[in-house]
Image (cartoon, rainbow, N blue to C red; front, side, top):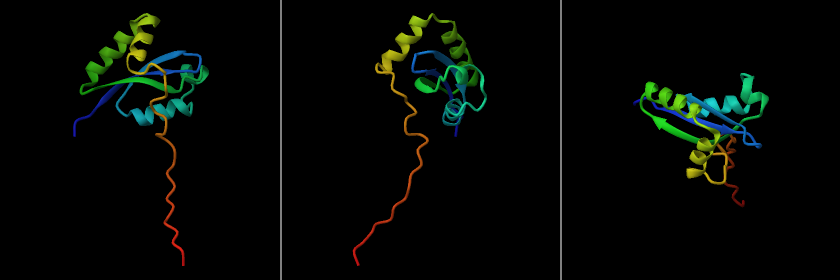
Amino acid sequence: MPKIYYVYILSSQRRVLYIGMTSNIERRIFQHKTHAFGGFTAKYNVTSLVYFERYGSALTAIRREKEMKAWRREEKIKLIESTNPTWKDLSYGWYQRHRYQPDRRAS
């Protein structure tokens, strides 16, 4: 199975933006949400996944990440709102535990 790479944009409630790249988006977003590494996203609580793109090549993803980081803020906002106009967290529900509840039958 070919490896997939992701370029993503995170946002805080105050719309502070962060752009990153990863090969495991679920793990990486979880790390941001739990402030696993500290740094910028932890300091500004930048934890909502508001945009992402998939690539089949790490080099292509890295180029795109660098391209997006060089953009003005307005261009980043326009990109986010082109697919996610309400800025909802696209990772919502990824980390909730599922509780199995067997059928309860009347005796």
